[in-house]
Length: 144
Figure: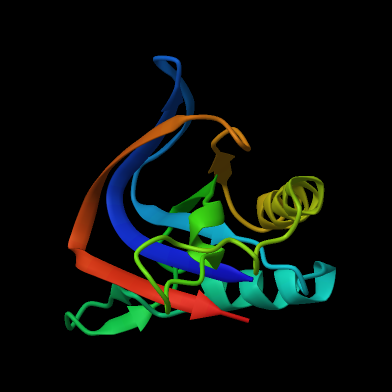
């Protein structure tokens, strides 16, 4: 399971010109689900996302996690994160989970996150437009 996290001042996701999810300060989490992923991996990745120290403390050092910074999560499904780009000029998606399994684990990740922090989402498998103001910019690739 893969999370590309971006520290944001704000972020929103729209489908057909309607806002599906929106946050102020927090993390935009682009979530990719691979074939071997399960609830255990989702739980471990969520803990890493929630505890990753990417927000500045009073001394300007990245020592605070999203909860300590009073932030939120915007979780957006991103199947292209599971692409194999090592060969050729066209990505292969053979490492990605089936759409049904990916949606199930995406929903599970969202439900677990919502129990711990204010969380918004996009719409699985939709053509989404994501807007954000990256803070820093600060972007990290987390993989379990």
